[in-house]
Length: 83
Image (cartoon, rainbow, N blue to C red; front, side):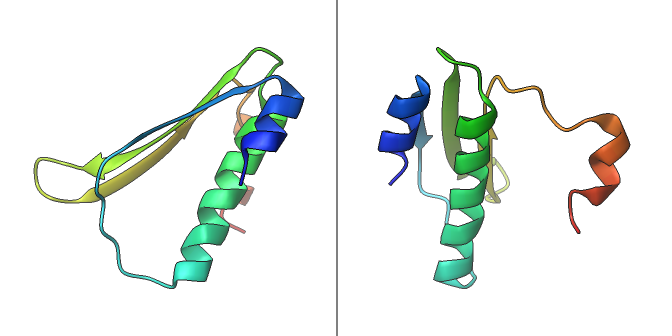
């Protein structure tokens, strides 16, 4: 889904995934992941990398990260992230 966008932006998109079961609405989870990956691609510099990882903690809790080389969210706007 995101490969064409990543290639057009000159971004190396990679996935390091392991089973990470969650309960929730499938379309909302796809929307969440799509927004995170799209933002990471759009805000990464050319020749940057975006890596999506998921798995389980030692305690059996699922986790997800989308790592990129973008500028991040300015400190003054951290409160607005969940609006």
